[in-house]
View 1 (cartoon, helix red, strand yellow):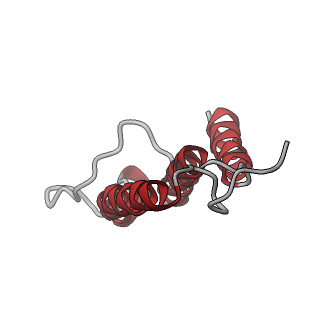
View 2 (view 1 turned 180 degrees about the vertical axis):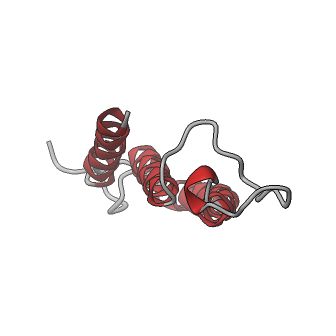
Length: 114
């Protein structure tokens, strides 16, 4: 399971970087989104991947950290998702404004000579 998870994070990160290097604004936004998803999955994986582990410590049993999921990475990722949505909305507004001012969606504001 860890290999598939690591491959998914790597593919998301590499696709995000590739899209960030493209000259169009929509590709830039998609690249930022994919890169943020990769970072969120990486942070989530740092909290230890476990299946069926309880997120809350049961007071009836002894506290064994191996039986419980770490809630801190889950809280960090949830916060990052909310901030990511707000940042994406801000980028969309700025890029649509730039397109309205320049008439093109090229990141430099000018279409390249063909």
